[in-house]
Image 1 (cartoon, rainbow, N blue to C red):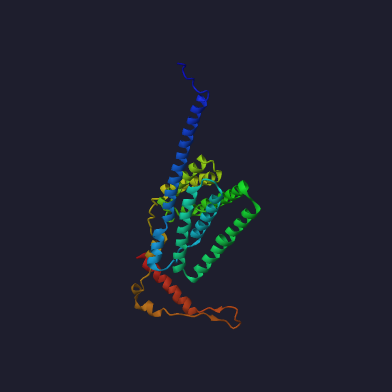
Image 2 (image 1 turned 90 degrees about the vertical axis):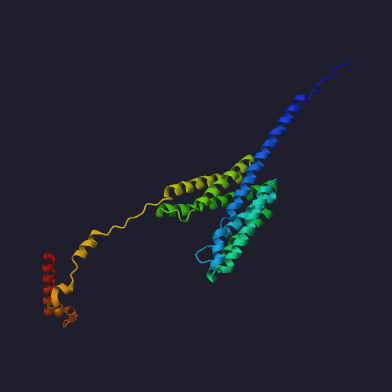
Amino acid sequence: MTPQKEPSGGAPRTSGYYECGEMALHLTWVFGFGLLGNIISCLVCLSPLPTFYQICKKKTSEGFQSIPYVIALFSAMLWLFYAIFKKETILLITINSFAFFTAIGYIVVYLLYATKKDKILTFKLLLLFNVFGFGLVCVLTLFLTQGHKRVQVLGWICMIFSICVFVAPLFIVRKVIKTKSVEFMPFSLSFFLTLSALMWFFYGYLKKDQFVAIPNILGFILGLLQMLLYMIYRNPKKVVEVEPKLQLEIYEHVVDLEKLGPAICSEITIEIPKLNASGNGFVEDQNAKGQALEIMKAIDVVNKL
């Protein structure tokens, strides 16, 4: 019986199995980081819930601004538009869909309890970013680009906008350094934003999507900076109020009029300066001048006691 020969393609088949295993592992890592990014980003999207609970409880949105939620809505719209034309981006679609609807919910609640002035400002912001801004992006990309070029243009727009969003907290960082207080920069939010940026960076890196990876490098660095500042300024030094020496000296030289006796007190009267005949100066009142000298002498006597 003639032994069967091994197929000449045996080595390539083994190599093919190896490559398939590598690809499967690679896709698993991509899905894992994308799933973790979704979960953490959902927690970040839900972080304003305590704020809106207070708004509903107090029935007023005074003291709060709508611009963070308008920007979040605009960002979600841009990334959804990008994900529609980009292949295999289901994880980008899921998280940005969630962010889209939560942002709409926050804006609706805000408008219900906002003042007339804040409502007008919110509508202006919505028109600027979510109507005209997003409409302009749609017109330019749908009519002037196509195919891979359209994906590239949308990717650059999303990346630049994401970088601007990540840079915005630098104003809070400046305030923390200036006031030496972390009151306006909660650690939990900074932590989850940093963790979210890390997950999405690895997701973009493994998928070879530079438009997702690059902005999250900056987000990760700024998140670390915020957490570092929190550790530095979380326990502000207590300021001990020390009574100024000058105030003590003034207190020691206060004259109790009762100690001066009724004779001097009875002679103290209020004198109103009078203009001279020409109207260019005041007439020197000798009585007032004499009373002032007597009071000064009395104060000196009391100080020497």
